[in-house]
Image (cartoon, rainbow, N blue to C red; front, side, top):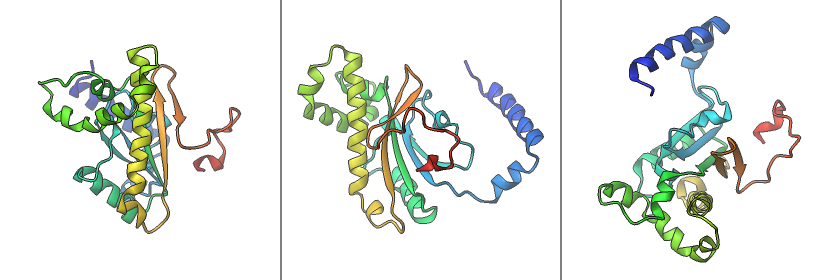
Amino acid sequence: MTSPKHMLVENLAWSDEIITRDPAYFRRLAGNQQPNVLWIGCSDSRVPEAITRAKPGEIFVHRNIANLVADNDESLSSVLEYAVTVLQVEHVIVCGHHCCGGVQAALRPPAPELPNVNRRIGGIRRLCALHTAELRELPSFEARADRLAELNVLAQVQALQAMSLIQRAPRPVRIHGWIFSMHEGRLKTLTDTPWPANYDTNAETAAG
């Protein structure tokens, strides 16, 4: 299990490695940030934005339980406001994932020892009720939870599109809904046309 001491040691090794390869890297990093993407993801330790191989400074990040979007969430609202108004990002990505504990909890009776989590995932419970017929057809709890995680991403995309912060952004913002398959290690687009199978990951058009 990772410990704080181990993390500090690994940080030294990481920074030394980067400085050896690129002595000016951290001077450039300290200069400014110009990310083109806001990532709204889940707090789950298995799904960091690093799954995209993004480097420091490339993605502005907000993470919470079950990658939720709510008008009354001041933390999210402040991140979103800064991202679209000051940084003027072009893309906002809502990224959920299969095997999501928050989504799975919404399929179970509320846990009395987790009152804050219960309040947080109330919207997912309501979403589950809206899609009862579809979810009931799936063969297992895991399959239902994974499908609900996808439906949750789509619901958060819709919530973002309705927010005044997005509608009055100084530049157009494209909103994307993605899901991460824990079993495959792959991201799947839920709102975009997927890249072709032979897509060149080195192409400059990747930001698309």
